[in-house]
Length: 246
Ligand code: 6PG
Image 1 (cartoon, protein in one colour):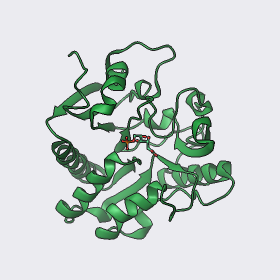
Image 2 (tube, protein in one colour):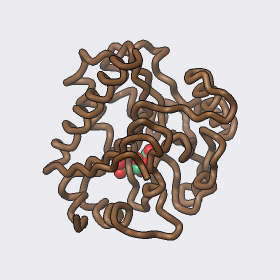
Image 3 (cartoon, protein in one colour):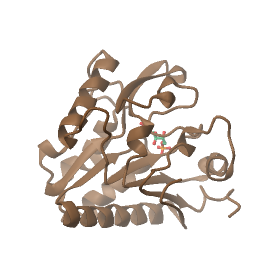
């Protein structure tokens, strides 16, 4: 079980992004004062875009020079592709803050060989965290979303990457998209000092109840994220939390 699981419910989507931004900054300031740097893996999709915009506008004075940004997953597309998580983060955050380019670690998803892109990114992680063979990086914060099917990062139900226990980053074939995704594996997610899920809107309510209160066999990917020595925080708005019973 994780050290702690907290479910925070706020009224609106706007409240959710403000609360998430405050938590991001709190965790960042704590990490920088404790160890001189803040390592974060960002989530993709559409929900977090508003968080990134808020961080860019309201927290431009945050200590971005000691912050190191990674991507928990990426689509198998070039960085300027409309589906690229990097493109979304670049437009909503990176172009608006004073973060040194060398502090941002982009997945080389333009590589037509998805497995090679994953290996390259894994090597970047190993170098940055100076990892011994078999060791996993401990991110100060990993941001995650939850898809309507219970996936998180690019760990989709019934996909091969769910069983990966030794690699840090893999190329995961996602049948429903007929495409690869590049994704962190569960060992990396579950090594984090803190994982913050963000879920907003009524379309997530049914799945959230399953993930947070249901017993599923096999467990849904979002249920499998339980940092072994870290904080698990679910940040929800009321609409997303509407079906929860406690
Ligand atoms: C991605 C994300 C993915 C996302 C969920 C939820 O690359 O799409 O990493 O895991 O977090 O699909 O997306 P929304 O929060 O936008 O619904």
